[in-house]
Length: 423
Image (cartoon, rainbow, N blue to C red; front, side, top):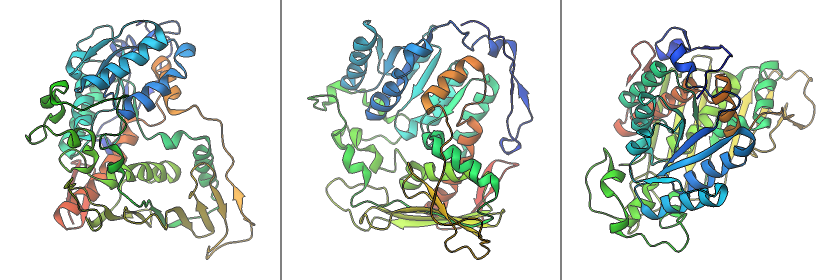
């Protein structure tokens, strides 16, 4: 890939424990020039990989001169389905691998998209950075602070372009919410909350679902060791392979899987950084059956921020009533119950001053979608919409809740040592 002529500083935050860095000549050599083909590999070819990542990039690949050249998944049928999509789009055969390591060994792959199960994200992100390839990585970025800091440090050292998969912040209406917040019309927040409820946990929808057409999950078609990675050994299970979202060996449940979108969003809108403390509780109260899922179907996390507000996230996956997303402020409310059409009012504001009247729609501000933003930044070297710093921030906030849930105590975060501890 050719050297870009545009020089921009790549700034890391003090929260990451680093000083400002600028792109080196070596890192510029990996940024695509205006006419270079961007060659992408997909790691993880399940529903998220094929239907979100690949389809999302394909909307822009002709305009942006990008193309998928390789796919990787431990399940043969999933990677074959992904390869068939590429054949339909480009008329060429792409390389297929069961291991992400083979993708990273491909010298002509410029960037990868990671949509593997949660327990692989940090390890694959770190390895991708060390291979010198740009990356789009799904959330949550990591399942513990050791993996998180190792991955972030590798990204900083390689100075690659990273987009984290918290795509809600790229909605034009969320850019509008960010600008509305900066205007000060709503005043200071006292509580920001999301209740994300459903009649059934989301992982039930993945058990043998979202599979390639007419697929049957057979042991001989799966590189089971590759799927397990650093998770505990266990016999092959089709239900585990497809329904891993429901097992704590591979994910940390609703707070880091769904709630991280909320954490990232309010952090983006308000500019809030790390919480002072967190408590989290929950359990399996409704769905107990033959699958023996271990993720909590009810969970609630509370974070106290030094800016002087509380953030609350809860999931009741045993009843769909009561879902909402609200920013309660001194001059009114920002209502994001419908993420596509947020609004704001003076309702409930103890210091409302008459400046806000009635129900007001948040005005959208033109913003590239999350995949287009990543492709554009691969050429410009500019910071992505959901940078590695943003990913680190929402990962730490989520992990504070995970540690509290696991150990039954209040947690704190020390930005100097980059550790989560007991309050």
